[in-house]
Length: 287
Image 1 (spheres, rainbow, N blue to C red):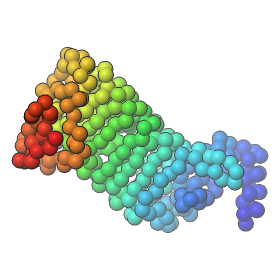
Image 2 (cartoon, rainbow, N blue to C red):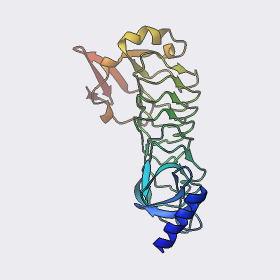
Image 3 (cartoon, rainbow, N blue to C red):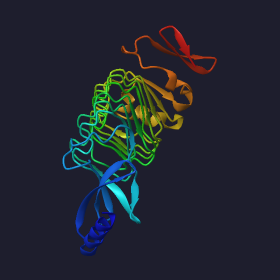
Image 4 (tube, rainbow, N blue to C red):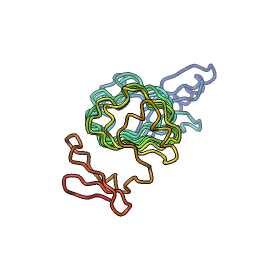
């Protein structure tokens, strides 16, 4: 059987056509395009719901080697993971540029997503996601990527990201802290709309990124920026609306350990004691 399949590969390669092999490599099923040496993540069998083939944590590689040839993983097929209710974690590689509709339909138990795609179309994995991490090669956060993920409490945007798309984090109701990288140039409309519990924004960009007036739900959060850029941020027509602008050097070292309050942060106080920033929340002190 393998000899026959190898022969078919050779024939397809000789005429440069696209062929679908539905072949499994390290637990993931692929279709191959011989003409441009790319691979598409797909499902097992003839129909998306023929098997419940994916479960647990799945890490999609950026490239695979099959019969001595290297294929770049460029896309995830329509309904590739449909109905895989045992899937809990997914990693998207930097090579992927396309995720087709319904690729993860019914995967209601995915709680962790690692997004390494440099520049890919948007795909929302559902409101049940509790952790969403971005790789250090991501250049664009697609529009609506994390929209409605109401269980997210913090997000770190790496230095490689230039643009945060429209409504990228809209409706993330428990989002309390965001860290924005040095390379950020634009935050599109409604990017953080509806994030009413957002109380700490750490923006490392030296020059104020272009930001739409609707990008944030309110301007009561604490904004931490490079000290030398404070004047530029203060004079910016949108960034300047933040009522509390502080230097990044004042950032608390253990901010990651502070849980997002379930109510709007009215019981949160930020004080300087002996030259050190401390946070007092519900009677507890963090420094």
